[in-house]
Length: 91
Image (tube, rainbow, N blue to C red; front, top):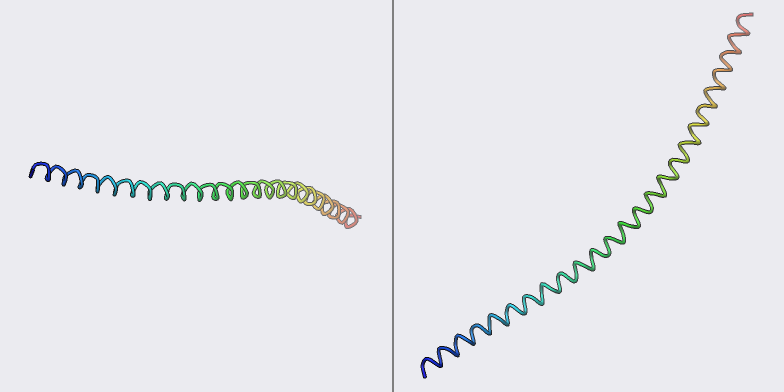
């Protein structure tokens, strides 16, 4: 009888450990689920930021081309004015 009682105690202890392990697995699964939701949110935000950055890069490139053209035209005008000034001073 004592053998049977000891054996039942060991089974009871093992069942308690198994129950604790199952509850820990449930908590871990909940954490993983929460982290996956957070990663989805972060991924959506990253995609939005990437789209915004691309839009800004395209706008910046077009502005750079326009400003480069204006700068060249300005230098041409300044060079022409200096040339005209030198021409009239020479006469």
